[in-house]
Image 1 (cartoon, rainbow, N blue to C red):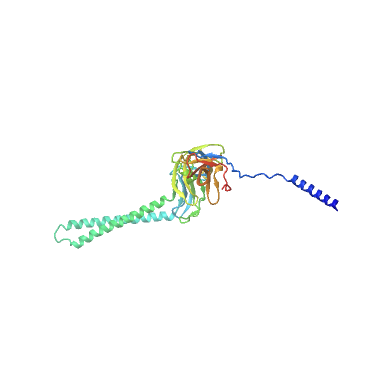
Image 2 (cartoon, one colour):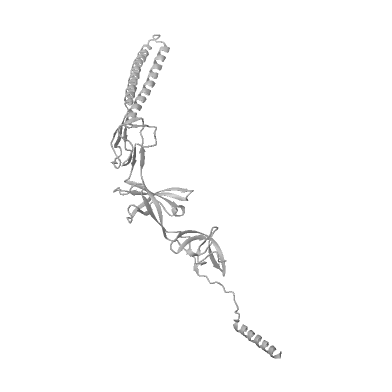
Length: 352
């Protein structure tokens, strides 16, 4: 019995030694302070380049409609024709206008004849009235009133005759400015209606002088001024650089897209550019001299805010900012910052 007790004690001793041998000594875990990469806040304008979509449009364009109801007699132009201001485009005919013109002329001539007769009668009465009691004052005043009435009627008929002559002028449709015919919807013999505005007889566009129209974000539009030089490239001629000057600014912000319409005059001397072409506008921004510059990765954007994390007096502080221009690795920010402040470069929401 004593022999068995000694054996059990030996087994327990060996098991205890084996357990102590497998246990590793515990290390003291100390709280280590995380180390962040930092950068200094700079203050200067950040130059950057923007590519904006633009579109070419004719400097002047018009849809030509008939002024009156008439038949098309001849069409002098077709699409693609270059015309000068005042060139005859379409001849119309309306026989009833000729008759109305003759009738108005006859009425005017008749009133002129009545006016001459009544005027002569009034002058004779004036001479006779010099003899006392020969002509009554009533007859004299009636004759004078008749002359005045005939004169008014004659002027009215003269105005009607002039109007009929001007209506005949509308039968000849002329170009209001230099340009190119880009649309034709009529042929000889067709009846055109002055009240129909759904389809024009012709469309005329000035293509020698074009407008390059672009909607610029309001933050960038504030840096652009009239006479500034702008580069643009068209999809039709890739690689061909065109240069224009800013000619007009709308000075009005679109409330839906927060953009301002800007136009650049383009002189298209060889007619290679066409209205409706798309273009890429290159805008060079000098940046805002009062802006602060930080690495792009230093700006944390979330659904609620946009901020950078400063290190001041050993403490981390989140400062809300507004971003503007940016390039490959830096961005302009505006906020409660100072030049020389220290920001965490690779900032994130996880940093508390």
